[in-house]
Length: 66
Image 1 (spheres, rainbow, N blue to C red):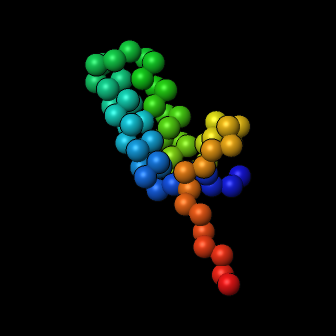
Image 2 (cartoon, rainbow, N blue to C red):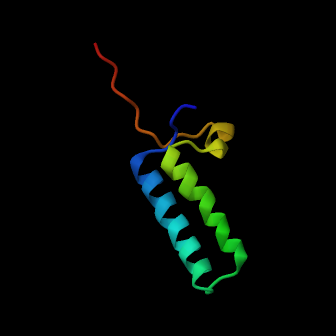
């Protein structure tokens, strides 16, 4: 698996996932909030299967040595 998520993308995924899970645990939203586990995992590992299928990458390009 090649990393296809940049730093900001990963951070936003983890924060959004944690918010969804926290809202579920407090009873504010229903059980569908457990879907927040998915962005937490993808943000933690830096790889998104949907990005791979769509050919998207938010990971910055690494400069090639001359």
